[in-house]
Length: 315
Image 1 (spheres, helix red, strand yellow):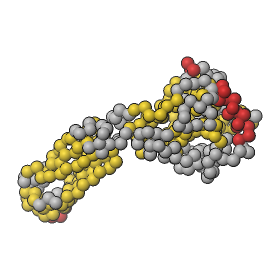
Image 2 (cartoon, rainbow, N blue to C red):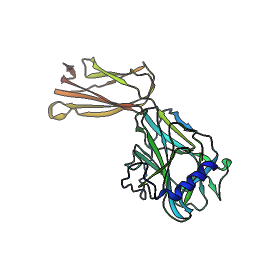
Image 3 (cartoon, rainbow, N blue to C red):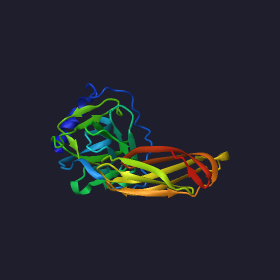
Image 4 (cartoon, one colour):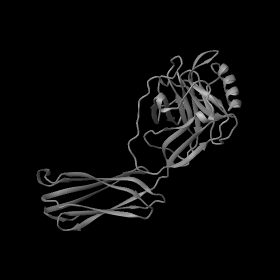
């Protein structure tokens, strides 16, 4: 990335006078909102990547003639419908004091689709320009988001404008990744300049979308409802959560609500559940809602009548 670094530094000098590569709107990058990811159990897969380093670039408050708060972005084109995490080959300078923020956007100057910040001690610390051995693949594990395969997205990395506060990010000064490029901003993300012959060292991970089908029926006349959930897609359904709600009966005495977890469901595989015994009198509504790490929400609702423990006329 020596070639990349030299071409980017030259470009930064004139960037403030350059037309924005993307239509500029105000984007506040000075107050990042921490967005930690919940515990998950799926097995995500590598999607897009560029791992061939030839140098590094500073991100944060750096000296380029004058002090400049430098933000960096890498565009990419996902091939999976769920984006789970991103890695960059990075290090923190020993003088770094502020978090490194990573955001995902579908437009460089629009709102964040996902955002997470990491503290300096989450990175290897270096004094001066790092060697490749001093860098590490840093994982930015934000809350999963749905993306559109084939559409351009941007990974944006930045930090606060405080003297001595900067990170090192690895890359390559040739066009190693054909589905994206590097962008640089010197004004807190309001405008961006493109460097089409440079790429950062990055990896994106994700999941393919799959589809679930719900079937609900009366398991027995004695207050028991059963249902099956089947994976009718081509990929494993991960972290499947089934939420059920029963409402109704005289004075709402049958109201019930709860969850079941199916974990990983292979293509063509199904799992069955039952709920009961219910006791009451009158009309009831039975609702099921299913979601997963790579499954968009599916719901079903049935009406029935209950006579003490006898469930009738499910429709």
